[in-house]
Image 1 (cartoon, rainbow, N blue to C red):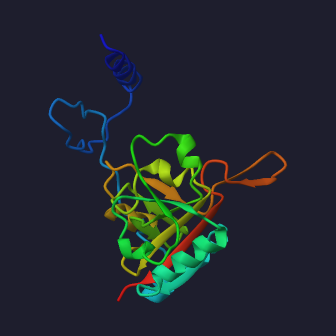
Image 2: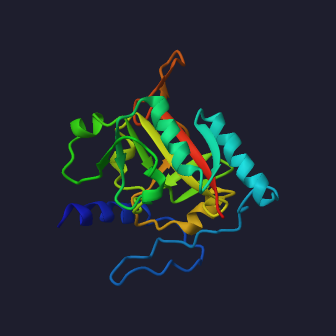
Image 3: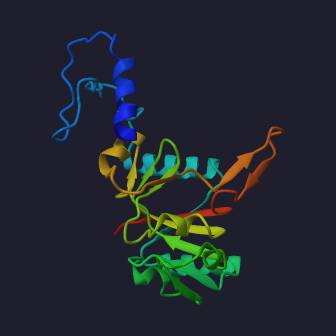
Length: 226
């Protein structure tokens, strides 16, 4: 008997006296035990209130700033110069870029581009001053940026080790109102990272320390489409 069989057997014994309510089980893959899987109701609110597209984007910017992310707004044509300015202000000479990052985004920047490689060690990543990525979706109600390892985002670790992260969000195309709306767009099989502001933690005295589990500085660039 495998460890998996042992654990599942204990779960079944623990649920043996749980009454069944007649709800049909969720269809599962062939050979999967679905006796105790129940359909989950999805009748909750998909988002709170009614907003225009502009109001949704404004709410995203407000909540991002509330989490101490630095928010910038620009156009597609001005984006390369905004990225150049942000990197220059940080004094970043080595910048990590995912393999599918649009070349135009970095076209004006005067820096060494370090490409995302599977062989890169944490020490090598720590020598990079900044990372520039896109995102999968941004959630207005929570001020959250979601990365899913897409071509313009790269591996999860490249946004966790460098101290400075510039994340480009296309608006309004990548902006949704709520977490349920975001989940509708995301593939649960992909490696997702949900980011609400720069990495931070607090001790028992509530002294905030930033840059513990990820970048100390998060700059989000909202780029108007068209």
